[in-house]
Length: 357
Image 1 (cartoon, one colour):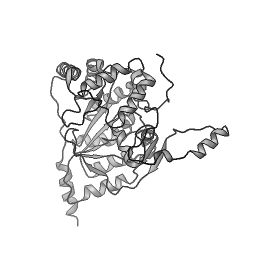
Image 2 (cartoon, helix red, strand yellow):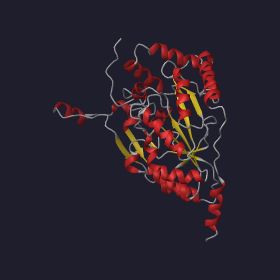
Image 3 (cartoon, rainbow, N blue to C red):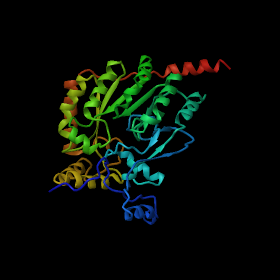
Image 4 (cartoon, rainbow, N blue to C red):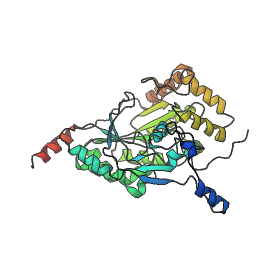
């Protein structure tokens, strides 16, 4: 079976219904239809950026199994277009769809640095690591122009406050100067997402992300500068990247990764429809096999929302993945490593600032 025509440079292959929008299908495309009739070029999926003005920027994470307590997202939506991204569903709360809209309509929080500074100066705030990203990548392409993430890092450094970073973009190399300064006081930890060693897999699965080669080079540079960097192989997708666990673990250990982690793919909310359509267009011969194997990991469903179980899955395939990671850790990461994050410097810095008044 031949792959269907795909929308190049995008993960999602269509717009889908927004479950919160009762009148979504009444929206009109009169201007685009006019241009089409006149023979003008139409870029329906060209990325647009929309400035928003939130009142707060640091979010309390209530999910007990995501490994963070506070997060900060300077952007909503992500142009990387990773087809499996669990964060797609959050775009529906803004009136957009989880498919093409998620990766082509990016909400920008330009006042994020000011809001963060206000938070860190608050007498009520007690220092605790804040994760940059967690919902969408803080180093996605528009960051190169807007530099919001860099400004946030400058605030963290100014107030000597701990920060974690989750990214798959090599743009993080731009901020090595700030990250090195944070690392000297154990104020930063980086999690670099690498899901495959095969560029062909990366291109179809994560269409607008950095190449695997560049990510591995970034991993090497970060660790060489003493910036503790871990690798997340997330998600593991049966029959797509599940066979690469040992080879990828070996490669990242050689590049200096402190540890590896993983999650098993789960297709929550609208992502099941998006991922299924993507399989039809890109891997039609493997579609049924992949979907059935994902379902086997989640007790017959494409998704599992049970805390503590949803990230790792259950059943034979999930057990095999877990066993492979156990082998990988024993072989390539024999010494257990845990990043020490310093929360004390911010409190002493803040107290010192207060004594000035």
